[in-house]
Length: 262
Image 1: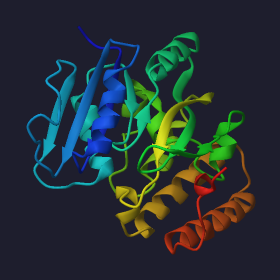
Image 2: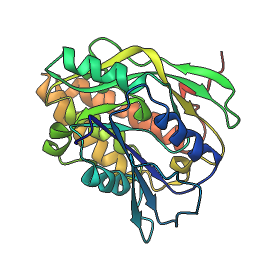
Image 3: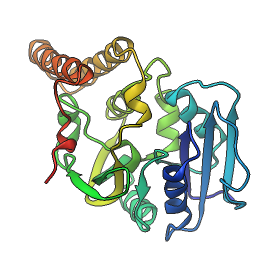
């Protein structure tokens, strides 16, 4: 039988954080799921990935990067809903059930995320990511409005926009949301459904360069701005501020808001 949700988890390591991420999906209250683990340039190790019929493993013989790994996972997935989880994050037990119920009650909904707790390497809470709830397409013209590990997407819409742009080894999620927001309704649940782990070994912090990804994101921001009737001059100003913020973050001169402890 076709599962209701396919959860795609790309990874470049099979460590304790990965095991915790996988266990959090295996423990979901929604049982009708498929888990697609994409090994991006690494070999699987005996006993690390459980022998569970719900798990499908996709292997890349060489590392191809996060967007290509996610696209491979989506291509192997079977369900009408695609959910994401990074290999070092943790989903709350009711996450998928809550999101599927929201989709079924809102036929026009195409993308759904949630708030996220911020945790450190050991799992201790350090903060909270409160994403926008209202006027999300407009918010996307200023910044990323979704936590990647919290999202669920209708598969048909993901395919319609062409999936993740493999030129974006950084910010591939933000670029995708900008494109999807032109297609249908996007939303966030104002409850914490995932824990986002911040630690020194985060794979996304090691990827480079920033330039190609930034150009992709800026082009997608401009297309969404035009579809919403935003003036070119106003969006140019927003883009300039956003670009400056990204350069400062890349140079480690500006901290993301989710790193501010509470």
